Length: 333
Image 1: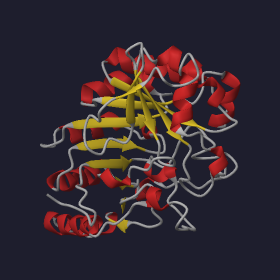
Image 2 (image 1 turned 90 degrees about the horizontal axis):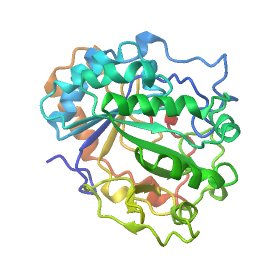
Image 3 (image 1 turned 180 degrees about the horizontal axis):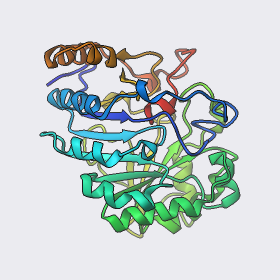
């Protein structure tokens, strides 16, 4: 088993397929930075499907069991079902998931499912049109995301819903979101994190997960929610179950870091390997791929990177200063 310096295995690989997105969420790609003149990556710099498949096979050979396709917004990548089909044929892959804003799922969900996709995680931060429109930066109505969720469910995909919670922005609408969607999917509420360099993060904007539970509950205390055991080692969301039998997940990277079990590696759309969501630099895998490196050389490179890994930024937050971090739009969260 390949282990890093903190004895964490390599089990999960997140693969970005594009840096483009059709929203401008304030905590990821704020419109003031990623405006009409922003220079996105040219197609030739992106990993091809063949290159992604080859890297995925390398990682699976080193212990990866789960693949997640991310962006930017991954459904903007042309012919995405073809990539899913390629990945689904790799021996050893137990799960293929997609993180998406859901806007294009009404026309893509069935094809993605047929290609071998197992799950989608859809982001929606509020059901209030004004609040959601402000958070997504383009005034997009939440119904467009809800239509995507329905399309995924109709196609037979398992669905989780992610909500980023920001103080003074959307915390007042959390219970409405929970009541409306808890019967359709598992909701996961994410503490606002200092990912990237442009989202204006500060600690005062964080709503701790314990407060989220209180806001979801009928009596405002959170007492109706009971903790559940993790489904697997390294699960990022702390699971709870409400009195009505519906499950909620809390991702508490700020108030309760979970670095100790992190088994995730990330590859950007241009083939750079990052071993932490908050990394400032990574390892170029595209260059050796395109220079003709054989499978053994790729395996040795990835093994060396993971074996030397010591990342635990969320546990060190406040003790270290990182002047630059990879943008979340490059590695998909």
